[in-house]
Length: 416
Image 1 (cartoon, rainbow, N blue to C red):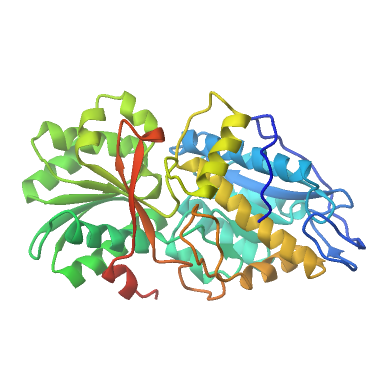
Image 2: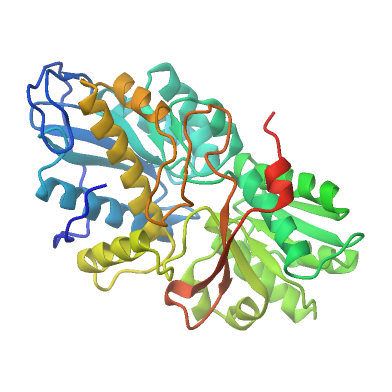
């Protein structure tokens, strides 16, 4: 990756309408190689258009808005530095509100105008869009971390899958937080590809480590988890793994604390938002809550994370902070690499971008994701290493990085 000083940019993401064409471009610059470059949907002589299907009005709206700001800032910086293949990169942003049917409709409306999808936020929404994008050979990045996405060669999962996260959560509870054979762990999870995948990893690890899983299935509409927490207390669980959203995390830890359950709670990638530390659940969160993520938290001192944070602060000095900042930066890095490699190969069509993705191995993002991401094996998680953080009121954005971690059950997990 080229390293440049972050440019001062506008925080708001814009929607661009770009008519696709077919042309050739000799001596392409901005990361491209020499020679003719074939182009197709989403690419003109002056612009490359990428799509973003995100959740700006659903359960993950707060973090999604942060990501859109960082995406725009990243591509504005790239454009100020000369663009890609002698073209500016533009974004077309649409809100699917975490609704799979709406995501499909929006994808169909934009597919002929984009060369790639920068992001489809959410497991259920990406599961709905990925088959269509695969048929049209359109790159899809930022798809959440559901293992179902791994079967698609056009998918670039940004780190370890939810199943790997879930397995690592159980391993960490045993290896670092004192659980032992015979103990029970509650798993509270969204029905669908996100939560069910986290449950699958946790169940595999529990079988490996001699633990019992007590599952509690919910939907995103359930924000009061009193019944689920009470059931887990009655079962006498020694820990809880959560595959849901921030609202569910606040409710769960609050009720557990009020009932005297002093047990660790480990949330998957999207469960924590620093705004939760301004809620009545703050004390309980600080006492017992951990986060397993595929991306380094905002407070990491890794060079890539520090660069991501500086870019975001310049773009929106008063913006909300969170792990979504390095996530969006890392996703944009991955897509940028695929676009530049496609240009160098002389094929800046949607199919050419997917081909470039399939050749990406040992990818280094300066600590944003675990080093050595490998996208050459369809059906495999690009890494089995995760970041483990603890909720903290002294760390920036509320998560203190404890370690990178890869447990034995995460290593042994197999994808069907």
